[in-house]
Amino acid sequence: MVSGPLPTGGDIHGHDHDHDSGHLTDVALRVRALESLLIEKGYVDPAALDAIVETYETKIGPRNGARVVARSWVDPDYREWLLDDATAAIKSLGYAGRQGEHMVAVENTGAVHNLVVCTLCSCYPLPVLGLPPVWYKSAPYRSRAVIDPRGVLAEFGVSLPPETKIRVWDSTAEIRYLVVPMRPAGTDGWSEERLASLVTRDSMIGAGLAIDPRSLAAEGRA
Amino acid sequence: MIPRKAALDAGDALLPIAREGDGPIFGEAWEAEAFAMVVALHEAKLFSWSEWTAALGREIAAASRSGDRDSGGSCYLHWLAALERIVVDKGAASRSALEQRKAAWARAAEATPHGQPILLANDPQSKGSP
Image (tube, rainbow over all chains, first blue to last red; front, side, top):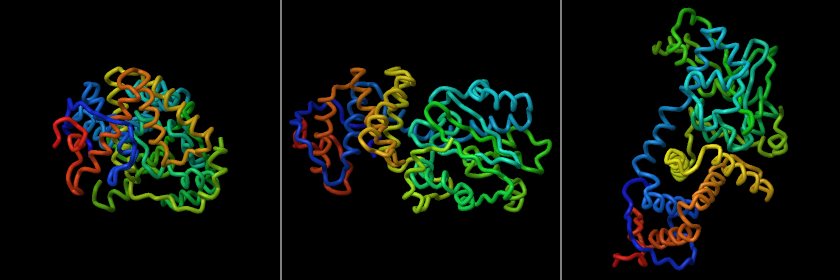
């Protein structure tokens, strides 16, 4: 793609007749125009752009949120704080900033399972969960999660006892939800770090459960 | 609690939810680049993050007024439109410079044989190209 050194300094004699090329879409042309101009003017560095994408794809991801959840599993005071004022409790672990404000944590119990959907683009808590997967923003997910949450969860491989109620929360730019999944059985005495490895992105939007260590053992990974 | 907008899109309920494993976070490479530019410009202090979310919010609101039902696929289109606007508003590049550069890339792409990397220097109107 565009990343990498671009020819700079060329004096462009454009005449503003705007037509799509055979092998770049209109959108790709707009992105290239922005990127090449911003690089020339020194606002952005191509290597930094690659690093940002890699960071969000692999490092930030959902690991920050996983640490929040793991802390809430081992520290009842922290859990209480998280459920009372999630933004502050999350910030105390150093995760704040880009769309990490206005957080609300909702806890899963035997009685209630929480599922989050997002009807706008700006609702996803980046510092905690990283970037949303493509399917999460898709219209089918958002519609079906509201109409038939149990069916959607079943499709995702999550079967809940019939007595467990499902609550669907609409994340917006004003309120962004973090699901605190139930701590799996058989994890007594585990360190926070080890517990965090059981917390998946899906479990923090309610589209999954925390990983059951027995399933890890069965795969020989525990 | 129930997203009204989503509930109205009942036709979507018939479609499968495309999920593969954890799923990619970007549908296309340009989305990743548009995303990264916003983060980089924020780091370069061209704008604050609240200025950015306000700009993005305005694009989304404008799109929904004109009938866009905010399907997931359009999120990064709003993102890109907001990025262009904030770059112009902050004086980092003019609207006409963006338009001219876009036209230059289109000419460069047309002049580039398939399979070759598209370079701005391939624009027949660019200085220095044959």
